[in-house]
Amino acid sequence: MKRIFPVIVSIFLCQTMVYADANLVSGTSMATNASMKSILASKSLLLGIEKISEDKVVAVGEYGHILLSTDGERWQQANVPVQTTLTSVSFYNDMLGWAVGHDATILHTNDGGKSWGVQNYQPELEKPLLDVVFKNPLEGLAIGAYGLVLRTTDGGKSWVNEFHNEFLSLDDKDYLEELKAEDTIAYEDEITFILPHFNRVVKDGTTLFLLGEVGLIAKSNNFGRTWQQFDEIYQGSFFDIGRTIAGNLLAVGLRGHIFRGIKNGAEWGSINSGTTALLNDVVFGEDNTIFILGNNGTVLISKDDGETFRTRIQDDGKALIAGVWFKNQLIAVSEIGAKVVTLPSN
Picture 1 (cartoon, rainbow, N blue to C red):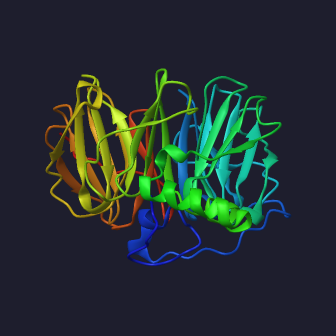
Picture 2: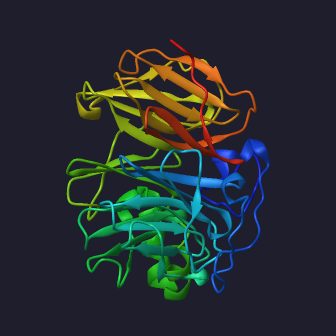
């Protein structure tokens, strides 16, 4: 997904492209210390946000910050046992949630996000996790840089690393077979970094969608045990996908690219976004409104099922990394924290 970083190199491996334009750099991960409480936590770099219920939203970011809000404007910091940068958060229901981040960190809550415990921490992998999803309270999947996939079948008590060779090219498969026969140590090292970065995993009914670099979009109907790649649409990275009310797919990525898939992704067409900003997230609002959030304060708005978009640039010009529709407002996380996005009146 991101073998090459064309703008800057930061320790946010899988999120580098998301806010590279802002030249952001973070401190090192500190998993041995609890996240410190700060009145400025909601104004710090935040990378993931999730609507837990109609009355609660949660956001995660640098220094192990996890924040809860009931209105999208006032935020309360949760008790978190690490200072590791967190990249994404997902809740199965209003009580059970998981957050992932650098050093292959996985955190879990069973009290609606008030307090968190460590389920996985593997700094030796030198890979961040970028997203997590659960099929039920026991079966979950976490994905990240260089094809990292961790699976649990016991609610996160244990996580098993999976290597998905279906994402290898034929040349890579031949190369690995030869290397394994000649040097098993070199083979074991090579397979840890040969796959593309996996940026996002999205649950759509019984189907999972996986998005990454090098134009990767894949789907699975067995919760990620095996994957089927879509035909290549373009060679850049994808960062999110969503299904419209009409049942069509919208995939977004680098340099303002939007692709609309009809017939469940059997046919894809390019949509004119009117921007070259990196696009990070697809958010569905009320009245069939679709929002796409991007760098440079970019908000794209569609009311015709994603066929056309108009642009609304936020005054501060800061990267909008992820968002949710919450209490009739678009709440986003950004390089300067959580914010209510300003939208046109009509």
